[in-house]
Length: 635
Image (cartoon, rainbow, N blue to C red; front, side, top):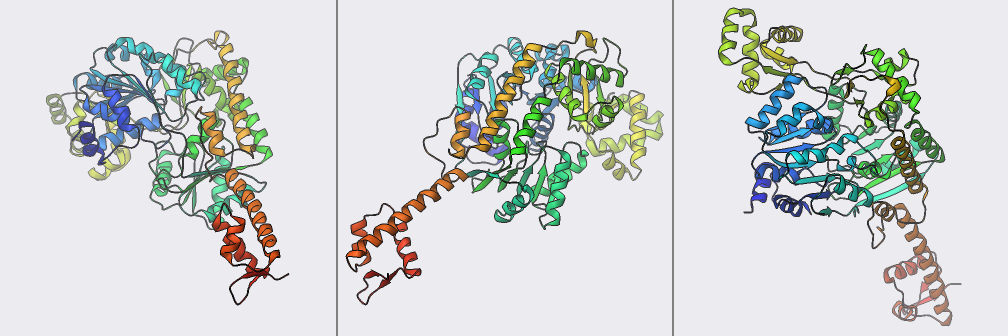
């Protein structure tokens, strides 16, 4: 058996690859630089995970999405594959140990956020690693023409100089032709090699419904299309309100947004995945990395800011290749609301400076301090303290992130991590001398094993307390004291949004913001917004054709299943029905005829439709059979 197929079967249990996966993997293993464009749910991760397992060394994976990073690491570990993740907000000791394990241990995958590439500790250690492959996920983030530009991605090319023999695989779900060219240039591809799966989804019916009462229409859609559903809105309050409306009308729904505690988000998501809840009403914080193939309908009650986001979110429907629907509920007020939202996203330089200074005051940071420090952040409390509007603050933080001044993680969860900082002998001596800690240390080792000596392990204080038969607060207190004594390194769980100062705190008067690039990004955002509004308002061309044209793909024929195609088909059928009705009527003015004779005289292009017209004329008593089974007019 081919090695790639053997790996696929051993770790994932699949017998064959999906379209394009095997070709991409083969070219990657050949040592070529590759750009893979595969729609949401197309199996992008396998394209670097299989080569990463085959080659000796560690596959370096760069991705900006912490939640997705954590999810993939857990999935790999569940399959017996050693993987680590490093991102903003981790303590230096934890980063240090994880990097050492990648150099001296048997780690196969290291997931890293792009901001980490610039740190001195990473640059020193990556030179010592046996890097087998460089994988860049969400590769559109490197392009200024993309919809989610991240300046830190521009540093990836510098890493290539440290590991010159290593080839690169870049992956994204959506990219326009300009972005495709830009990705290859910015990542310094040695040769152009692009694999693109068609953006067309033969099983997915796109439609836009222009309605005033969106809730009533939503209810109609959900009653007409059975099965799991996602409803997207752009505010947390709207998610809660719509979920309540659905529950009142007999549709079992939950709401989901980044402001909910991690355990609550996890519970809601698990219930939905297991079909214990039918409809998830959510902001765009929901959906990334969720493996649920049987979603039958995705409804957008708010417009996305660009067609890339819409395509990805709508594409979460029908991954099982069965018939599915993507619906936008739209009215004129939505276009105005979207324009206002895009305007808010590009605050003035003075406003950025004001928010930045307020952050420095909030955390009491002196100029030159704070680099790499992570802080819990409550956006509403912060906004109220400084008399600011929380939505304007949100977008100001996003712009500061674009300028690499800070990192802002709105939806952040990092479980408690523990590492035993001394060797076996020292630990034993400590236990003998400090018997009050002995039950806790034994509980940790029995529950989580000896890997704690070489790795940071995710732990649950609740689980440990139950195992020991004590209160959770007793476990937390004990671990905190062991950390203070230098026996363990204990990083307590974080579940609040985080602000991390990527650079030392600056004087706002000299804030490093590129005004020209900021203006360019604002213009690009407005162009993308205009494309969304054009898509929502358009009533003539096939929806799939419009989307594919946006992504630079030529579509040979109409999809036949979107709202535009179905309306035109219905109109065309009406014309044909009227024509057949007229011709039948005209032919029978000459006298009674059998159906076959009428058929021969009319010569219809659609025989089934022709026969249907005859049946309907009989039902309406416009035609009758005589005793020789000939048809004749009744009038």
